[in-house]
Length: 338
Image 1 (cartoon, rainbow, N blue to C red):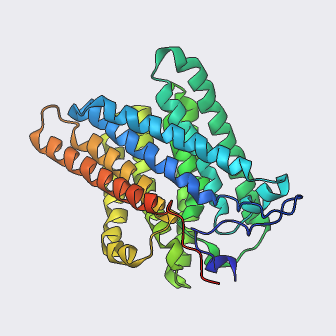
Image 2 (cartoon, rainbow, N blue to C red):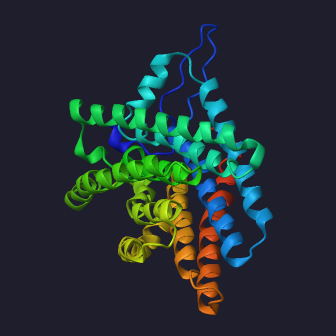
């Protein structure tokens, strides 16, 4: 079976035997980190709703706490199943699942930036934001070097290739701006925009010319639509609403890239559910957050409030549905009859 045929829900490697002769537990697939990433995105949506719409602040805080617990639990579980550094190297070089490793520092960046709003935690959280940005940059440098020197089947490319290059940089920009490091935030934004053009163009060419994306990777198509909203939220953190022309450009681009997703809904629904569907969640949450901010710029706008609540409800429905469906995956599978 080729790497392209491996579905994103499968483990990164087959179980091996331990020195004691017992089968080792399979390693967690790296796209499992998409759970905490999606929850962080929805937490950000509800935090923005609290500020713009007067939504209960406790909802956002509960989601941030849940995202932090899920992120830490996933890190610990993943690390516990590594038997050697070679296992980690195999996972990072995996042509399908490897790019999802970027979600580890990227989610940490979002969590730390939110924690910076708590007075006693500000210094430690700022350091954590800087460390997460440095880790994301290091992984990006390694990832690009690997792309330049290790040829791969073009069919292996999918929306997740935007995570180390575009998503990680744009989220870092937002987090750095949140803790007051504007110059570094603008630099990170520039990196994200550069790779949005480069990787995005290569990805579009691959998707347009085939082969067809395997069903298990179909949800990663949603990641292709995420950059305008993530860039918009980053710019909002950097400069607020002070430059409306930038937001108008990003809003138009966001609508243009989200519209095709409406035509993909039926294809998503026909796919067997797997952890890979968490690829839908951060795009939904980031887009809702950005739309909410733009819709509620005018104080007291009734129509803006209606739009704001609609996008919050839509994002919550998407993430909630994926979350509930994921719980069903925890049920033990019946053993095949011998």
